[in-house]
Length: 84
Image (tube, rainbow, N blue to C red; front, top):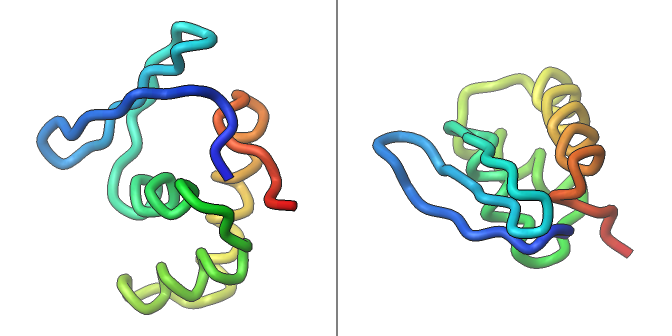
C-alpha cells in the first residue's frame, strides 16, 4: 500500500514520482513502475510476484528478491507501507 502522498507522471519509459510530503523526486522503470501502480490498492508481496512473473520472463525466486528489496526501499523512503 502506498504511504506518502505523491503525484506521478509518465516520462518516456519511466514513471516519475514527486513525494509531496518530503519534496523528493523518484524515477521507477519497468517492473518497479508496475509494482508502484499495483500498490494503489493493498497488495501482498505474493500477489506482486505473481503479477510480475506473468508479465516478465523472470524466475519467481529472483523476482521475490527484487520485489522484497524494492518494497523495503519504498518503505524506508516513506512511499509505501506494509499492507494490513
